[in-house]
Structures are given as C-alpha cells and as structure tokens.
Amino acid sequence: MGIGIQTAFSGALLGLLIYCLRIVLNYPAMFDWPRAVLLMIFGGMAGPVVFFWLYFAACRLPLIWGLRAAWLLRRWGGGALRGLLLTLCLALLILPLFNTALENWFDVRFAKNDQNVLYGVYSEKKPPAFRWAGLLDGSLQNQFGQYFNNSFSLRPILIKLNNQFYYSVFAKSYMYDDAIVVGKKRWLYEEAYIRFQQNIANQTHIAHIERYAKQLRELQDLLRKRGVTFLLLISPSKATTYPEYIPEQFHWFSRPGQLNQQMLMPLLDKYGVNYYDAQATALRWRDKAPATLFCQGGTHWNDLGAIYALQGMLAKLEKISGKKLTRLRLDGVDIDNKPIGFDRDLAELLNLYYQPYDFPTPHPKVTPLRDAATFTGDLALVGGSFNWIILNLLHKYGVFDTMDFYYYFRTAFRSYHAGREPAPQSKIDVWTMDWDARIFNKDFVIVEMNSAVIPFGNYVSAFARGARQNDK
Image (cartoon, rainbow, N blue to C red; front, side, top):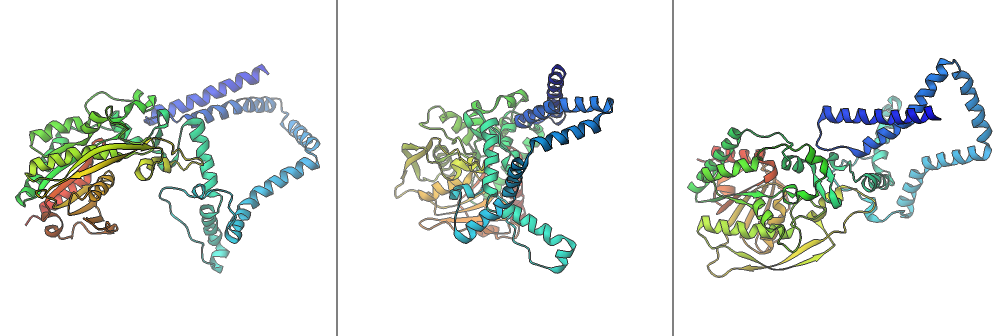
C-alpha cells in the first residue's frame, strides 16, 4: 500500500512537472489549470499501474494475473450486471437517434430552445447525396458520419454540459479558439486584449510607430485638401479599463516598458494628427459613472461607455471643423440585469447550459441637443466592431444625415440614413469603388482603432494607401 501511494504521488508530481515544462517552453499568457489538474490525476493513477505492471513483468507473472483478473470479472459480473452494462451501452448508442426522431417526428424536446442553440460561427453540414460509388469506397459513410456528428439533436446539449463543467469547476472555457479568459468575479476578457495590456505581446519599435503617425498626418492633409474633416478615434480596451479582474497569472508574465499607445500619443501630438482618446475618457469615468462602462459578459463597451465617448468625440469634431454639431446630454441611467447584444457577446460564446447573463447592464437616457444652426452632414467611418454601438447611437439620435461604415476597410459595407432603417450589410470592392462619391465628398471621415492593437490596424494603412492612390 505504501509503495502504491508513493508511486501515485510521484506520478502526480511527474504530471505537474511535464505540464510546467510545457508552460516554460511554449511561454503562454496563462496557465491551463484544468489540463494541469487532469494531467496530475492521470499521472497519479498511472503511477501504481506502471509500478505493478513492471513488478509482475519482472516476476514473470503477467499471464497468471491476467487469468486471475478474468476469473474475478466473471465471478463478480454475473448475468444481471452484464445485462445492465449492455443495456447502458445500447442506450448510449440509441439515445441520439431516439431523441432526433422524437424532435423531428413528434416535436418533443428535452431541453429549452436556448439550450439547443450554439453561438458563434460554425459550418452547418448538409446530408450527403447517396451514390453507389461513395458507398463502395467508404466516402459516403464518412460524409454521413460528419453530418450526423454536427447535426444530431443532443450535440448542443452535450457541448454545453461539457463547457459547464470546465466553467463551473475550473473557471475555464475552451470556446472561441480558447481565447476567452474567465477573470475574477467571472468577468470575461479576450486574451489578446490582456496580452497587449500586460505588455506580453511583442512590442513595436518606436520607428514603426512614428511612421504610422506620419501616415495618419498625410491622410489628414489629403482629406483636408478635399474639404473633409478627419479624426482618429482611439476606442478603449476592457483589459485596460478594468485590469483589476484580470487573473493573477497574467501579471506573472507582464513586461516592463511603455505600451504601444503610450508611445503613439506623443507622436500624434508631434505631427498634429486630429484624434480623440476614448481610452482616456473611459479611465476618467470608470470610477465616477453610475455603472461599469464594459459589461461583465461583453468584450465591447456598453451604451453608457459609448455615450461618454461620443460626447467628447462630437465636441472634438465641432472644434476642428468649426461647425456646430448635435450634442448628446446624459439625463440618467437605468440599470437592470438583462444584457442583450454586445453586452453579453463573450458570455454567449461560452455556450454554457446555464448562461451567465445575470450581471448589471446600464441603459442611458439621452437627449439630443440641436437648434437651427446645428450642422448634420455626412460621415464615413472606417474601423472595427467597436463602431457598431456608436453607429446605432448616432443613428438613433440623428446626429448625421448619412453614415457609411467600412468594416475593417474590407468588403463589408453598411449605410445609415436619417429617419430610415439602416441598410443591410453588403459587399463592396474598396479598391474599385468610387472614392469621390463615397469618401471625398463626405463632411467627416473618422478612422477608429482600438487602443490594444496599436499600431497593428492594417486596415488603417490600407485606407490611407487607397486614399492616396485615388487622389486625382
């Protein structure tokens, strides 16, 4: 017994040592606690097994012990036990087919509708067409197996139960390509934002950041020549705004030195680039606001955080353009525990059986202030997902006549017109489009870039290059 305990303990330590060695060699941003614990458990279980196997092999008794184990199994595993095990195995095999038949033929469901839905992007496979050739060479069976694995009715429930185990026991999620970090008090982050905030990601050389600032100034001068007011909007990062909920293990790998944004800001001032730092606004309001500016289960700012940023951004646009714009007055904030949309985008991607949606969500009450002298005009906006919220707010309060949004300056395009529903997102070739009609005739052009990814917003450089090439 003592030898078995010692080998179990040694196996557990060996499993932990192997895991720590992998940590050092791969240098990840965080420890993968669930896999470390499981490796220790299996190491502890494997230790005695390996020891006794070697012992019996040395004594040349493996055949005798194998016969002994078979005799014990036959003696203890009588007909009733074997029948029960056989029934359970058959039930596990038949259950998916049985449940699928009940849902499709009789509309009988064993779970709520939200438990049968998986959030995120995944490819939905269609049943394969029957072909004799495919049946004979085995490809039809493989295709049907892939189709059934992705479409049988219990799949979402089983995935969510598995995710629930890791989330509830280890505060861990493997969804979204393992990019969701469950922080303190169950705050959710995207790992990439934490890596930049902790300076774990590779730092950029100051010369590259300076070239970036010069490029922005050239874009600003080109648009000014066309009568267009340019503004760089630096959106905030949840990890930078609320670092206190980041797990401790990330702090162990943090590096000293300036963040890329801290290096960029003086260069923007040096080259005279018009910008609005919404990250600074978020830090200024985070302790004074009636609610958090990022929701616990979301990766983007909420409506309250966006309103604070819009107030400052519109004031900045008004100052550099010389035109009076609509102002947004915050009259109060209603708070409930009913997050929707971006307020729970990361919580949805966890795909848990019991979704963690019970967290405070602010709903600001806003009054747009305008008079006869207020200028609306047309806006073109280039940027990422942080813009969806501010576009909806600008459209809701009628700040601009029209707004065209180029999502990461790729092929995604959406148009907003005052008093009308936003046009559905469409495809547009940004390299062959009419720049005079879509960009150069606007009153305002805003380029948004998140503070965490400076200066890796390749779409900003692509937009500047496209403007330069089409400036005739």
